[in-house]
Each structure stands twice: as C-alpha cells, then as structure tokens.
Length: 97
Image (cartoon, rainbow, N blue to C red; front, side, top):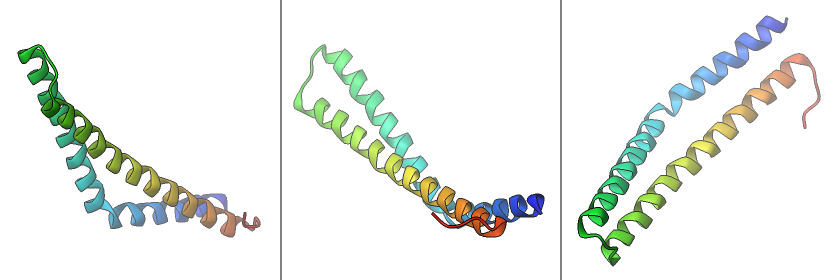
C-alpha cells in the first residue's frame, strides 16, 4: 500500500511538472537575461569608474526581473507539494489539514 501511495503521488507530480514545463522554461530565460544585465551593469560601472542613473536602472531592473520568476517558481513548487501532500493524505486515510 505504501509503495502504491508513493507511486501515485510521484505520477501526479510528474504530470504537474510536464504541464508547467513551458512556464518554467520562460522563467529560466528571464533569470538568465537578468544575470546578463547585472554583469553588463557591473562592466559599465568598472569601465567608467562611477555609477550613473543608467547603471542603477539596469541593476534595479535586473533584480526585479529576478524576483518575478523566483516568486512564481516558489509559488508553483509550494502548490505542487501541497497537492502531493493532499494526495498522500487521502490515499493513506489521514484527515485533511
């Protein structure tokens, strides 16, 4: 019975991951672009030996671009794990939280 519960929960998680594969790919691209913007801003600051409004805009924009995918991925994983927990609880006969 325990192996069946684990297998069914993992199957549900696998289906969920496949459903949101494109979304996770977009978030990965956003994170890469954000990292490249931060590297570019650092390069400009070292070359000019100063900080201007343009570099600050790049830094704040890149960190904002990092925050959105990180928040969405965290939300997605939280919902996924809550779903798996609910499935395991139901299949094992435990009461819902």
